[in-house]
Image (cartoon, rainbow, N blue to C red; front, side):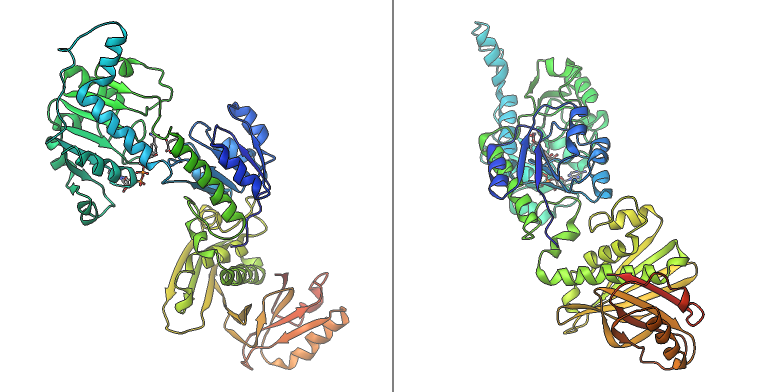
Length: 528
Ligand code: NAD
Ligand code: MLT
């Protein structure tokens, strides 16, 4: 991928100072402005290429749309639910997080909440501070031999499991993605939720908040649990339905809850927080010096690596770019974009496009179909789209415009690699076949015409289709010469009859192509 130019970064929250230092050491200007109102952020964001946030800054659609040159939103932490990732993607902005920087801290806080629930530590502390010595009230239970149900067996779920096993807890869990044999290797037996609910003494959730996890624990699931089950949410408010939790606490169906996160932060309804069997923290899972240092440092290093074109780590909306960070891919990206532009120029009277098919061929392009498809769509959509198309937003923009994109790869051992782009428009199909030869992106075929000499896709190009015999060619070149056109190269089609496309490399674009019209069936010029 071409290095992304980031000159100015705004840090809108208290992020570890290493973040600023690393960015500055790499020539990026940094402005720290914590605690801005939304209007202030909207006013500020205009001048920045990068934004670094934690979880308090709400990077909503209006903030993103107010930005003029924003290229990256860096989340120093895990959850990106405070960023409108869909809008950022459509605007071509990379969103990245630092998913592992605070795993241990969040896992440790989860374990601390489990222990607090088993021994009522916070309540006992409060009682003593009120000058009481009450030993009966805070009778606890051991964790040893109890069953912990873990919903979400990703990074944090795994760390919680291994830590709580050291207390002698049996760990069971559920995760639709993590394979059972993987979680079994760190001691978690997976099962369906229906099997899990009645077995748990404790349940802890470690999933993202999304439609399928919202209210994962609700009235119905609480009734399937053991009476007195204790629950912990150190992931995201809303995974445990708060109203259902309060009802379960009041009825005794739930014996206690450890909460670090809330549906609304800070909460406006304090009934749950004030319940005597609730132990809670104001979203402190990642609030350790170590986690903050790691996250601040990681996000800065990830931005610097991206700027230097070294690697793309932590991108949540631009995975296609991850395989573009090597010099060879630059030529292929250029090829894809140029083929898209050639097809757009040659089909300009026939829009809108209905479908675009991209087919890569050959071993070396096995992992390139994704970014080559995006590149071809960038070429097709450039000009005429109010959102500047780039590799991040090309496919969502195409989808929004009603274009169906089909990508495929044909594996051919040892082949040099080629890419075919087919555009279906108004009942016609336009096709381009290209490759990279001796580090130069070249066009090999256009709409069935195979060029005698591969056409280098750089500079100014003129394409025209001549009907029937090539006797017309001298007349065409005569018109071009009379128009003062200087030719860099000329590439004819290998076929000698039927409609054939020709390509001419020209020093500068012609004012208009009307002089050619009587002689050719179609003509298009473009700078690539
Ligand atoms: P992760 O992506 O590594 O793991 C999440 C797991 O949830 C994945 O394995 C996924 O397959 C699983 N999952 C998805 N849908 C599920 C479902 N319906 N049922 C069960 N499992 C499901 O994420 P992580 O780094 O472990 O973080 C987990 C959560 O913790 C996230 O919500 C994150 O934002 C939050 N978090 C909170 C704090 C804090 O300060 N309290 C700190 C860090 C992370
Ligand atoms: C996270 O998802 O990383 C956390 O909620 C921690 C935070 O940034 O405050």
